[in-house]
Length: 431
Image 1 (cartoon, helix red, strand yellow):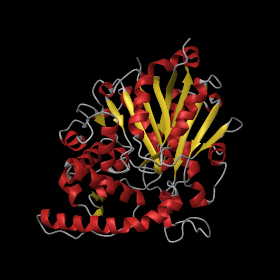
Image 2 (cartoon, rainbow, N blue to C red):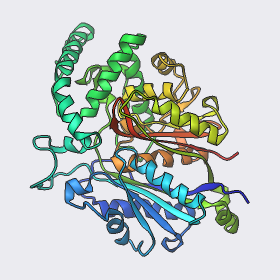
Image 3 (tube, one colour):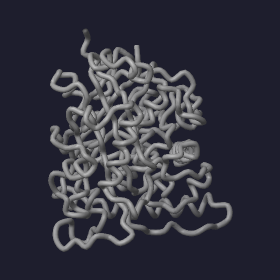
């Protein structure tokens, strides 16, 4: 008997701005969907891992978040572990559920992530947070806050220069003399990504249009995903003509804020063999890798993906479909290079050629990605898995990738030094 681990159930709710929903109700619905997907009951779960980042900051639920959210729906008494790993929290929760079953401690484990980022009437916060930063403090908390607040002053000049360049380019290229770029509050991460994009453009000749092609692709993919936050199409021109957040990134190139929850259930091979009715739709977890970043220059994507490829017995050329952490369109470009889908420096032409379209060489973000499916922080990593399992089962409808057999999920969280503070790579697909 091998110790292979399988995903047997996935579930999520539509990601959106959901002012009428609570953390408890969203969690309960996604878990119920995952249980229904595999025909199990709550009593079949041996343990659970719950991912969330902001419930403490927004509504003071600083501790026992998973116990509070899950017990409301009759899931209690079992071991429940809370996971916070910034935007990689969902996939980190999954990694720990996978590891617990692989070690033989449990036979069936639940990983669930939920996040509420939108409130029609923001909660009154009298203490905590970062003074003057409002909702943005939630994103800054995914960094070394002390270092980031110092860095923000140093970044200011670069941001201003980048936005001046954006205005100049917009005035040059705009056919109808549209509006000047508008200033809006945004996550400091958008400035980090914009700096990376400008450096890539300078070194490799990447163009803003190539980055826009990625955003347009993901927005168009989302029109075929009923669970996506955005479901409207975008042309490359529309993406480029949206207002500039931080040059070269326009609003359409940046992931939105929103609410949502997603869940996945894993089981041991023994449990699968004892319950043969689950086998038809079970998907093998071929690799599960969690790594942390470094304050020093370090290609965490290549390091983690190389480990995952070795664990899974595949290479980047074997991946049919991938969900990657496109907090911005440039992030997808950067990740496709790091994963080895194309050479470093060629991410722009690779995307512009159509290689990452649903019918391309390797379909990237057929769900719409974070850019359009949405990015409720603690739920995003498991939402990626929901999409990939749906693809591998051949159940994705209009957005189905033809003959999808091997799938990869890349989920990064926070920033430490020049890269992600936490990074998960998962590979799925039966042998």
